[in-house]
Length: 114
Length: 118
Image (cartoon, rainbow over the protein chains, first blue to last red):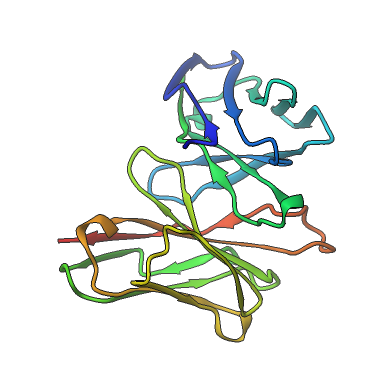
């Protein structure tokens, strides 16, 4: 049972435009959400996170939005750059439940075209 | 480099052999995690240590798998009697517990050890 779902395996955008990556989750116990970026032959690199008490968190070109009622979060990248081309993973944890594990989606491959 | 270090980067072994991987976390981090990633999937949690104590284990961690973190520093993951289904990328991550300067549960990953079982 996939508790964290990234339904778009791939996304292609033009340089300078907005990239929007989506993530849905099913476990209402999740209270902390993270986005990671992964290049080939490297480990996932932390990008940005959000706690369930917030609905938005911004860090430079990256903004994460959380809609708890819809169990949906999204990552916005503005403006997109060719160096952003990578696989993006959404992850969630149920920290108040005492679990430290991250549950990951399958990832979305973002391609930013010059 | 002060990030998470994993060795070896690649391991090729024959079915039935034992393998051991090592992870050196970021030095001030007290929490260490092991994940496994197969093609087209996100990382899947295997186990977690706080200092030297193994606090959580996934059902994915069969009795052929054992992880240790002696003295709460580096960790090893051993797979006994490897099977072809064990072929995957094994990722290690570390984080700083509550009260530290870093936000809770941001896990920092190493580059992984790619295991191929022939």
